Length: 216
Image 1: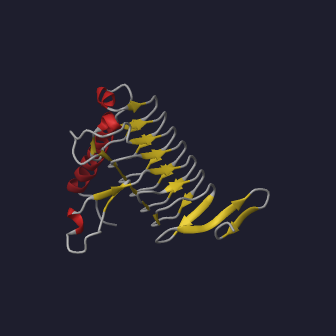
Image 2: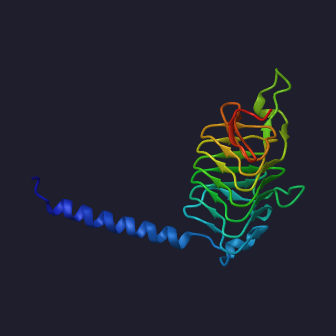
């Protein structure tokens, strides 16, 4: 048995103190509706919280958070291209009640991103309502004018880890999106989406249950 040296005992003691300090700091740094920072938002309802450490957040005045919604650590919530940009409508990003946004996810809004209630989003999900266009084959894609289409995610949906929700996506209620899927287009309620590009893998039929593939 390897003897426990004084150096190892000190390392364990110090490590425990560092972890406790980090946990305390993150708890204190969590942002709730009673914090002054919450007043920057278009709406920040009771029970909502931005867990620490926070990701990049700007143009808060165009972001609405519903009651009891939790935004995980390192989540990016951004509207526009810069913190002082004036947008054409408000709010741009709307997150309903009792939603959970997983660690490291990104919601990048320019026109309209609407999340219903009771939505759970896994880690590292990317949702945006804007893409660069590529109409001119002789011009760099990154310098071409962007195109925008609103995004809607229906209440009760689940978005798996590393999924990408692209401009124009309109997901019905209680939609399940498989991990790693790339979603664009309109889909009905109660379906399972997966793949690149995403397609309907299963759908629900009332009084019959789940069926494979897309509805007829």
